[in-house]
Length: 297
Image (tube, rainbow, N blue to C red; front, side, top):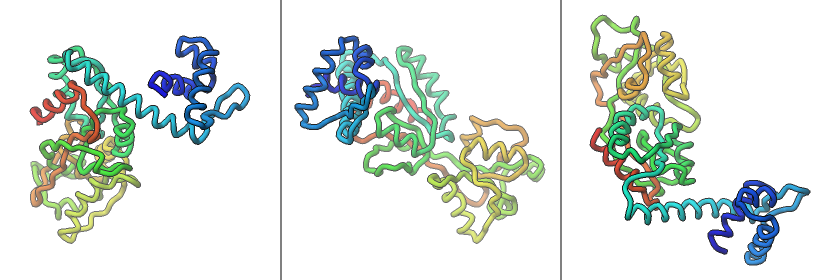
């Protein structure tokens, strides 16, 4: 089986019909049917159940499709690598970022696009688990994220380029903030009701912050667990609770009625990094953008 036949198989799997797949491939139906028969004969398995006009993948077909998609992406990466040996920086760069790191991208992307105008971007926002899946599927070259990176896959899969850390600050409704106060201790902050970033699967930032309270024997009342930064900050703005979040988040969100307060008695830092698949060849544009992220940090 060669790459051409893999493309034929993937087209049939996607369309569910020989006729539509042949049209997508710009070829006649009989030759495509013969190619499918040859593939099944070579592998010694049935790849599709014929259910009326619709073709449904068998268990063997599902496995081949998943492996074929990965192989095609690796093949395309190889072609890109070879082409880049003789070309400048160009093409489409697909990257991801957790919501709390999105504010780091605009100044870097502005300079990057001025220097490399032939590169366009696809940018995906999401949590660790979504972005981890997109990395594994090779839909993204790298992501900018809070560390440690939590996903459904083992950490050995990833390479990590650390960026400078980001200090945590307290966010309070302005009416709760003592006049002219620029810093408060955790003991003072513990008197307020709190909002925290936490879901069933993402607990890293919550644990990091509230372990500091616990270390001092403090237990602030948590009035809401929030699944996103935007929800947490909107609730702070509405006077429902306080929050402790990385300072850079405020570059993306500028809500009314929210005061930013330094934390006086602890050095609480959020680690940031660029994460990518260890076995993946990064495009020239990805490597240049990573270099710029380091320079801007």
